[in-house]
Length: 138
Image (cartoon, rainbow, N blue to C red):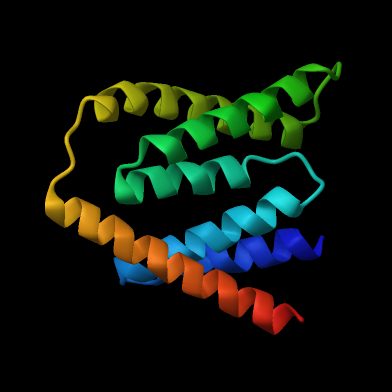
């Protein structure tokens, strides 16, 4: 439950911040927290999808796609679904649709120098954020 709450906090910060440089580490932190939560939900896949949108990264779209497919596979192994599980299933199906449509569009795209510099600065910010989150958790 703690990981879910932490992930929710970081994802909420993404929606509140205007600074796109800060959205990246908040999304990355939310993915980390949601992926450690034991529940089956779409939040990790959605955050990975948002990371893909933010920096135009095929790898994040692929991770979102894989995450969503794993969740759908797990849900499919059960019989009748409750309303919350149906909502999770439809959210995961939407992630699959978006990711599958974006991957081919981005695979042929050539990155400009400014795109590369922006992505590198976001990765650096994420590394800094990860350091501080580990530091403060201990």
